[in-house]
Length: 241
Image (cartoon, rainbow, N blue to C red; front, side, top):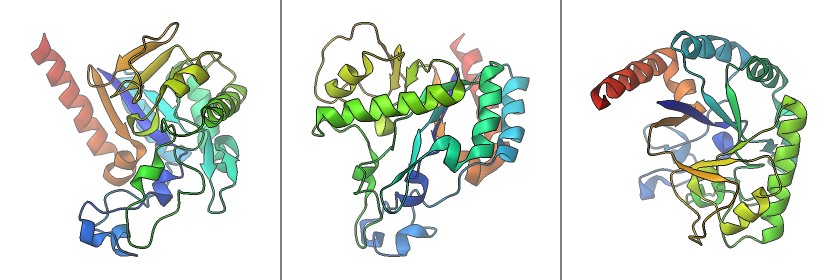
C-alpha cells in the first residue's frame, strides 16, 4: 500500500467551509461541530511531523506528501509554502533529501483565487478545486509553472508527481504539465473533459493500492489514528495475498 497525505500548505484548510447538511450552510454554523464538514483547522507543525514520520519509517513506508506551493491569503495574495511555514518546510525538506518521503505537487493554490473565501449562506467547496476545465489555458500553465518552480527551487530536487486537488484536472492541465519534470499524475479520476491518451506522463488511479487522506485527519485524530490506518493496511495486504 502507498500512503499519500494531501493539502500540506493549502489555505483550503482555513477557507473551505461548508456543511453536509444544506440548512447548516449558514454563517458560523458550518464552522462548528457537528455541522462542519471541512475547515477550519490548523497546519501541521514541524514538531508534529517529527512524531508522524518516524511511524512511517518504523513500518518501512515512504509516504507521498502532496504540498500546495502557495497559501492564498484573505486578500488573494499568495505566500509561498516555505515562507508561510518555514519550520515545517525545513523539516520536510530534510526528510525529502534523506529519501524518507516523496514530495508531490498539489497545485499552486488548491482553489480558484478570489472565490476562495467562505460564503455567508452557501458552501464554497466548488471553488476549492484549482484546475477546472472551464478555466483558461493560461491559468493552468501559470499555476503549474509557478508551483513547480517554488517546490523544485526550495526542495532542490525534481518534483515528478502531480496530485490535483479534489481529483479535478483537465486536458489543459496535462498540456501544462508536458514541459515539466512531472512523470505521474495520481488521482481518483482521469481528465474531466477528455479521454486523450497521455504521452510521457503516467496516470495512476489512487483507488488501487493507495491509502490517501489529508493533513486534516492527522491534525484532528492524531498519531493513534495513523497507527490504526497502517495496521489496517497490513491486514488488507495479507488478505489480498
